[in-house]
Length: 355
Image (cartoon, rainbow, N blue to C red; front, side, top):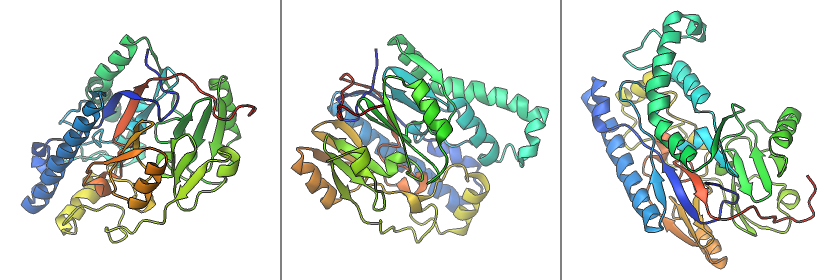
């Protein structure tokens, strides 16, 4: 049976994202704009392949979601956004997540009549959702779901937006869940977590967005953190915290960026058809967003000497791989992967802590 209890246990099975092939963008009429997205596709898959080879060198089994070229929803570049293994239960909100993205953000040239939320009542949208659910959700992820079930694991649909891969940090008996808004009233979330995970000590922490772009417990005793996070003495007493300075981005304060992407046709294409593909990279710290292979090895995409030197003090080697278009996909190495199975059992790193 698959399980994940600690982020630093030896990684055995992992999902790696997937994007469209270059020919998918043949519908873009402007030749210059089309060439940008064709290169985006080529570079992204090349970087995926380098990551996959690195994982296989560590003995990790790699699975990948499929996709349908008939739809213009965001491809599953970041599979962690939609699901997470907690203990030996796989939680997924893929159906709801993709459904919303498809309707609100993924208007492709073949479905220009999807314009407003009011049209959700339109029978055409209901019919289209059924087709979409079959071809994208079922075909794209069904083989992964089947593989998980074959290991003896259960899959649970859990649509609370906080219970997804980027928001959950697994530290043995302690389960940390981030929030999208700081200083909010999360009483219901705390009650939900306490009921869903009675064997864990659950914590709701103010991250103001994805936890895995905010802090990373790399190994027992060490956290790499976003520059303005605090409260670690309460949640991780006596652990060392390496704070990173704000990033100095190269994308001129834009929400997304690709080399040469200041071409107006490229901008128009993104704004018209790909609003659901992009995040907001001004809020992302890629140096925090790393994939831990085991207690002695991590994979990261940014060659940050400060981080690398600190990891070395704890006996951890950093392996740097490229992800050239992270400023478009708004995803680091942790985002573009999803750990399904790690060796190990639940440990208690803070004995005596009450639930």
